[in-house]
Length: 410
Image 1: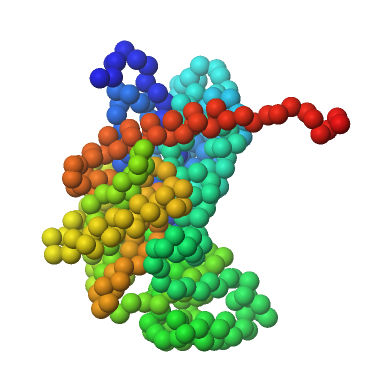
Image 2: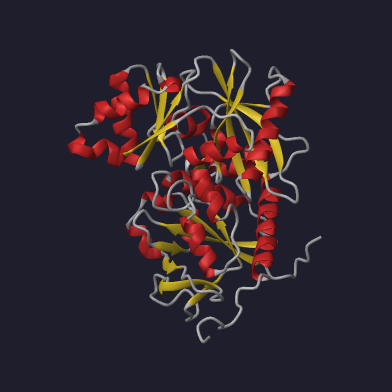
């Protein structure tokens, strides 16, 4: 049992960020801050605003703070993380001032941090960018490293890698903004023709989505050439690459989470339910039905999506196959922390296809672990993620980084 006299470790929870999934990251962060073991850890909320500035302070734990932005940002300290090893925490750029004008903390340049808990979603946070900064700073941080984060964010490259490990995927093509904008945008028809001439993509419906985003932002199911053109333009508003895939006529989406441990293991499976009976939308995940429910002072986010957890009428062999593919994908990509892997089941053929991985899933998929057998409660899951991150950091700092000057003065 933890010695309660032991000093708590400071966990800096990083969230927000320069992504269209900004507000979803806020929801995930507020949830995990409330679930942290307060006997062992002291949460330090660190908010990255859309303009890239970093802030920290207790006021960030309230949802009301975000309603009053940008004025409310004056009530918290502005900080940053410098890519310099052994600094021991966040560098203060603008100290937090109390209403009386007195400094809210002792005069120091650094806010000490023991571990960084990454709770970003999407670009500049889930894709390896922040992970690279954390590596440069040589600090302990949760979740995937640079390579796994980057691979997981790039849907096309992720599919290709897991396919090389024997996990079935649907075929896909990628279109870039540069291709679409060539010749002043007059080659849209040529781009479309190139897609449709591929046998695996020659018939509608097709599915179009940004290649490096999540939360169902910019996605579309298209039924003809005109809709394909419009969907490509829409997807490329949010990303530099759009991915096109065949759309299964009769399918079932199956999701499963994987948790890092000595041996990664899978949660119970779920079937998410869309409002239209078709593809899940941003509104399904965060605004409609369960997604609009609230607990305390914030939305449930991804945890509120209408879903069927461990469906009794889903064949047990399909459940086990999804779990097996999920763990194998997690390990093939070199993931850490917790991830959610989404699959598509072709109800006509019984084939199960890897669709994508979320290396920092909404709400950290805690709802799947709470319903697993045996259940893993959110607080315990967070503790396990933190402890594994600390262990990985100890392994990194034990590596030899210097061999001295030899070639330079030869």
